[in-house]
Length: 67
Ligand SMILES: [Zn+2]
Image (tube, rainbow, N blue to C red):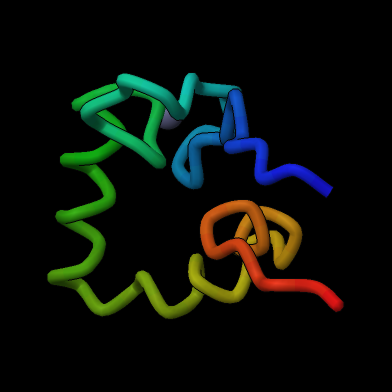
């Protein structure tokens, strides 16, 4: 019912659970993973990773109003 923000998200890079609140590298666990992922963008490999995104995780990112 209440909108509770996710406490942790799994790093898309290494799947380590990382804090969401106050994490400047989110959704990554660290700057390292973030930079590696940005590097993959350049290689256009990210589209593969994007398909691995958990829909549940997206729901946490974008709260949908429910009737
Ligand atoms: Zn990571």
